[in-house]
Amino acid sequence: EAGVAQSPRYKIIEKRQSVAFWCNPISGHATLYWYQQILGQGPKLLIQFQNNGVVDDSQLPKDRFSAERLKGVDSTLKIQPAKLEDSAVYLCASSFYRGELQETQYFGPGTRLLVL
Amino acid sequence: DQQVKQNSPSLSVQEGRISILNCDYTNSMFDYFLWYKKYPAEGPTFLISISSIKDKNEDGRFTVFLNKSAKHLSLHIVPSQPGDSAVYFCAASATNNDMRFGAGTRLTVKP
Image 1 (tube, rainbow over the protein chains, first blue to last red):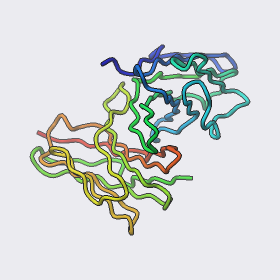
Image 2: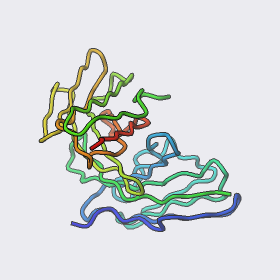
Image 3: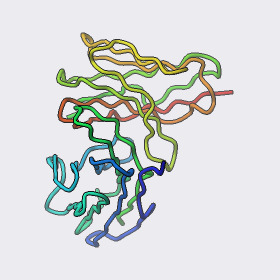
């Protein structure tokens, strides 16, 4: 079974530029998550989708970050404009929704972003 | 708000001995706990989980213990192997599936 796919793996941009990340979850997984992991910290949830609807985006800096999952499968996360403090690894995860309250999340390899 | 804390940033053990990784949480609404393992340049990999209705869950060399009254959980690896060297993240979630992670503990198993 293929895992969560993410691209690109690495990205270097200058501050105030825009950047987009792509994620393809495990087939059949209805729930998709984007996390930000700053060096030395654990992953922090940015946004959670259930199919193509947003379940939780309370920690997403909406003035510069946006995400979409139009067809309920793959998703993009965009930063516009980027700041130095956005340098981090952006992780995508997915889980299989069976109506249960807790589902194990499976992570992709992440996109490492460096903002100069 | 650091609701999940891993106070030991690193741990070093000898091959064949027990590794004990600790995690504390503050939110009493958490009822599902997980451990993830992360190698460099890879995403976290699910290792083992435990529901709040249990106090122990075992999977091969890995055992997770939960002490709800102390809001503490631990991961035991017995025996430790060099391939276990990685960063281990503790995570906790409440019914809304909003998962919170600790900062991680880097385990080094020496041959």
